[in-house]
Image 1 (cartoon, rainbow over the protein chains, first blue to last red):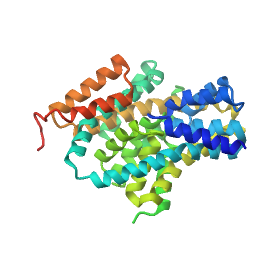
Image 2: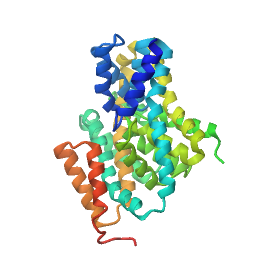
Image 3: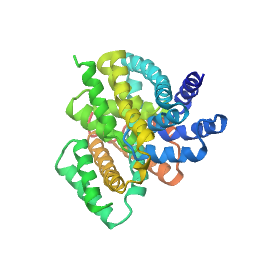
Image 4: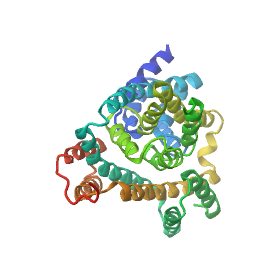
Length: 172
Length: 179
């Protein structure tokens, strides 16, 4: 039955895709070759849609792929199965974190990693910048937004809504 | 005690406004879960991202699960996870069902053009903010600089970066600003 198959395949992806949303792409590509659910071309469309709609990319793709395979039920089965492994893993790690919260070595390892994670986040920003900062106009908007955020602290959602309106007005 | 519905709704809201993947969600997580509700600290959030990078699953979902667990144990974990994935599921199903032309809609593209610029600005701002509070000594500067070089020049994978950086904790702290 297709739902059982979907659950099994997406549970596997959730378990083995280490490192975030786009890491699931090669796994989905394998699915497109093994099953008749969606083609490799459709997969390319899915990636495009997933990147320009709200939500984590990995989740968007699981929903889209599940939907292509078996409609709304398939979308739910694929998405829930994909997040199940990480929920279980996070549960166990949270447990350990509570136990080791006061451990000197654990804390020192985390404080060593933190600057590296900041670099990773910046790098992710750079990746997005490559496709969005394409001319003087977008660069100017980036500068204005960055300065506004720096001097006029507001909630992130406020700026996202404002910039969607800017995008419409300036035809970005 | 924070209600499960509150957790679900807050993460649902974050899911709606996350564009461009897990890292793009960090500024929103920081502004909602750290600054507004004070559910977790900034250090906690960065720790979750370090762990999320090396464990299975989608990073944004992992971060949500960690915060949910911290608030209300297993029910909280489930509420946060379902909250953060629900908007995706609803929006993608709607698109697949009836909005196939959605991708080509010119106005949608304009709005997304603006949002993508905003996400870059949000990321710059969040990192700058965390930098001011979190980078305390020479070792931190070195780890950051080495990570930037490895990422930009050598395109090293994120998991390797986190694993290498964990080794840096064995370098003694020098020039600490804070004890």
